[in-house]
Image (spheres, helix red, strand yellow):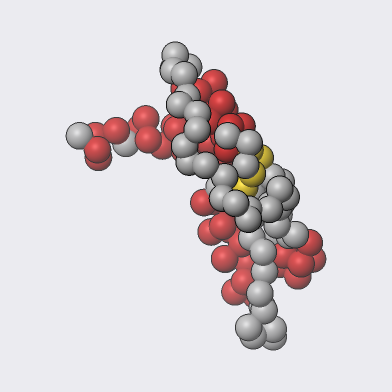
Length: 111
């Protein structure tokens, strides 16, 4: 699970969206909203396992890396930082911890 992504926590996306309200002077502006850091899918899986404390062994091999997938997958968030005065508040660990906490508190929604 060595292919990479730039994961972002939903609260950061919502925060960036709210920051756009102040940009009425720049209609149609496009921003990369992401963490600005790439992680392997394996990093994601291993972080979830550590945070949950579950004794599981991930099944490796699926999904496969796509043939033309780039080895570097990281958003340039400098424009959002400059024009929106925005940066992500959550790193991978914090975002996953908050997600796990939410699902734990709302498990009855899935029963």
